Length: 416
Image: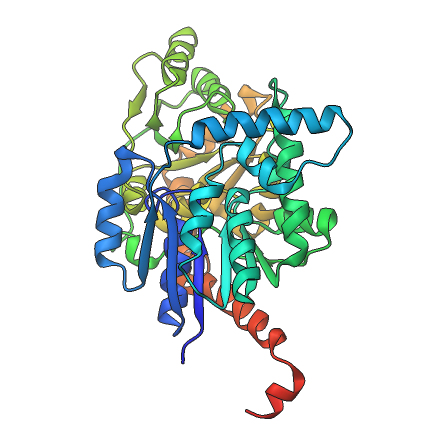
């Protein structure tokens, strides 16, 4: 009988490619896989439908409960009152206070029996841990970010981080294994909770890559950045300012939701530095198209800032999207990206977001046809030889197999 694994996430299938990649890898390795994800986004529902229709594993989607908003407000009030009284906030209350769909996920998981429940994001931990206890199963956790290090200096962030830590502290010590999206995220969790982790980078399948490298002639540089939401804390202002300093004609395409108007603010910066008309806002696109879309450019941007500890130590999927697309990446000097840069060689350039003139000089050097071609060739090689899901999934499969192996008593092993 195949081992049964249940992957649990508060997000949708379309918004979390990491869940989809994990489910497919485990299914292909012979596990019986169920994904339990939320169906809260009307904008992503059609994409979720498409993924669910072709998935070879069982897909369960959880709809929003009408009482969730009220429950979150009540939980937040209770949590703050308990803190004021110097009392411990229960993990379930802490999770609900952050609008996590704890109740709907818990109710759904009562009917999903597995031998391993893998939580993605802190919001899924209470439900996954409860199901693991109920069914006498193992608990695993995938840390795409250092969640208790995501806090910024914005009002209310200290309270939110305390609630995240309450959830992590209650359940992570019970995990049979943990995977992390960067070595430094894993190290941060080990330091905080004593839980060892396996690094599983946010890379993508070779099937998403273009068939051949893009050959572009001409002057200038076409730069690209993408995310689900355009923000003002992602280093884009510094890049646009560098565009105004550079001798090379540079264009920048920014892809993502402009729901908060931050894209308009970036267009205003472009006008202030003489780059008006050279910065464009593009709409969101399906995750499965991101590598192909990136391949149309000369360079990709991963300009993380020190807005939070998580941003300092993460390695986002942007980096590996660009490499698989065959374009070099310009990265800011965060600790995680500085540590990665030597492995990327000519396919990466490190820059300071505090020095637009230095960044402009880097861009001018990349505009040389020879330098641009060499950097692109190295990115193409790295995407195919090292930074792809066909290589990286082995780390996940080894971690899961080892967790199951450790759970088998010595006598049971001898009997096989």
